[in-house]
Length: 398
Image (tube, rainbow, N blue to C red; front, side, top):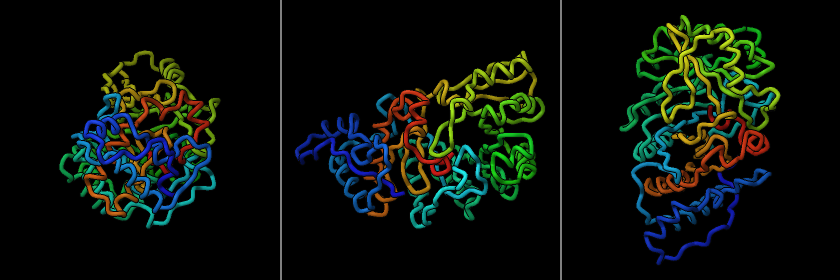
């Protein structure tokens, strides 16, 4: 899949006499990402890299000369200081909610960002106010250079926090080095049963992941998070057991509402809202303490009295938290995705490889952030998200 879709010719090119004030207004009020991406099309369309560059150059002709802001604030006043970077499209599992059973077509390695390109873009985002990074995939730990890359990213001025989201299969051999950095670990685990693990991931490996979790809890200087996607016919009956883990294990279990992405067969009959999960948990644990949630938190946090750990809910579908969103995503093929649920993307890879300057790249990033929708990528509700076009989750980055 190429990086940028065809242009919607919604704006004419501004004249050279356009004032700085008018150019600044154009960043704040447009151009839409649909100016160089057809975000609303039912059928995914691709363009050649040369056309991609033409569209980006046309955008720059309109916004070049505007003052670059010191941070990435959208039109709703949300400052974006958190970047999630997908390091690879490859994965050593085949989770049902992440990719179709037949897998996905992987792009040639030359179409993906190189290590140097990842570092260059991260430095630019840091200059624009990003202080928190999370490395995702695919499975980020399948990269042979994961440790030197993580070390380089953590050392970038302005980066205060580095996290990795992993399925845990390859975690044990990297654990000591990651804890020494340190890296905040999020480990995906959707069941506590070996046979169900094989069913949901289409691979074996539960014992390996569980051993890695126990070792991570013992070694990590920061609390380990366990991500659990809840589905009615699969693991709803295990939410009480997951909460029970927190009584003696210092982990943050986060129950994630199942979200629709291309080809993951999302259904509202299988979807479980957090309120239903909480009702089930309260029947087993009547005394539950509510913890403080911060403005940018994605999780509603709770704790059992005197428990070692805590638990929470990521309620993207039933009660979205878009109003406090501070996140941007960089896909493995170099596309900036300003919203998880939106399909509008802009290729920073193509811009870099065509020789765009750092200042031009920052202007493109700023313009993209300015066009971020308030909620759910512009969709009205979860059903509209399910009907829309998007990448499979593995090609977005978890």
